[in-house]
Length: 386
Ligand SMILES: Cc1cc2nc3c(=O)[nH]c(=O)nc-3n(C[C@H](O)[C@H](O)[C@H](O)COP(=O)(O)OP(=O)(O)OC[C@H]3O[C@@H](n4cnc5c(N)ncnc54)[C@H](O)[C@@H]3O)c2cc1C
Image (cartoon, rainbow, N blue to C red; front, top):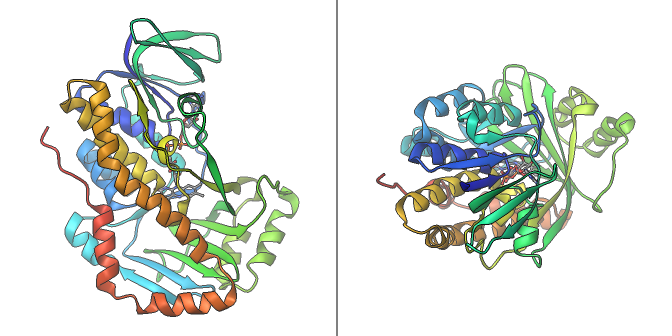
């Protein structure tokens, strides 16, 4: 019988597994994909996430940093690249030793996988349902007809989590009204912008950019849309180019230098806040527990924080049920605030012209000190003595 079974080998699942290895907690992880493909575009990793990697293994942090690109500026600008808010990240570097960085998701996933003990990872195993046994353990049933017994289940299976659907069938995914395209362009960005992560807001659209590595630049484009729309790959680049024709030329240069068949479209949603993330010895983490829109670039970072806190509470608490309860108590306030702030930011980023002018004037007046305080609070994580 397994002690703990983690369902899902995304960021939350893999980082939980790495934290368990570090703290000597026995587990097995089941991921439905049969191979780890280099899919996805870029992801920004903020210092709260990087501190967890450093705690797991300083070599892991170094490998991640060497495979991506570090920012010394985080910039929000209007559609012509005129700054609205421009945050020099020196104060972050002084405090934590590093700042936010961007990396290709596929690369990140491969690096994490390489640090895992492979005997504990089962790929090509899709969870179907769980059944509680008389001794309070669970039987996990998989799509291939196989089943195993386990004391406990961690649902790290993403925003559409099948575990959550069984555990909390009333939970609701909320479409934000916005759709997002992401790509990696074969494009060397202007050196002046290479160490900035930046987002352009305007014309009821949003366009984000960051260098990933030599000759590769990550971009994302967001627009209001009905859900479940499909793209014609033949015309997609022309449509996106038209959409961003009034933007700074960098937007269209990036779109033009990205192969159409690698552009990913995602409808942006979040999860209506849950009253709890656990029941008995089943616990949800990451997007399965608190999926948020990507407007603050914090969904992945919060999944990584979850892994860190959950593993410490399990290591330091006699009972799994109590550990899960402590985990929820500690994480709830920060995560719920971010879910709400991300949704609000989505509305502020894409708005009509009169509100845009008011928004830009207000944001240009926000004192640096206020922004810095907010960022510090976001990036801070607890230190455990274990
Ligand atoms: C457009 C966009 C941009 C974003 N940008 C950022 C960013 O810059 N920074 C950031 O921190 N966050 C960002 N995020 C958020 C981030 O991607 C998510 O928060 C993060 O991926 C959540 O990780 P997770 O492991 O919880 O879920 P997922 O990444 O969804 O992983 C879930 C895993 O579970 C597996 N799975 C699902 N069902 C089963 C099953 N039945 N059996 C077995 N396995 C299963 C899946 O195959 C998958 O591997 C962004 C999100 C979007 C949509």
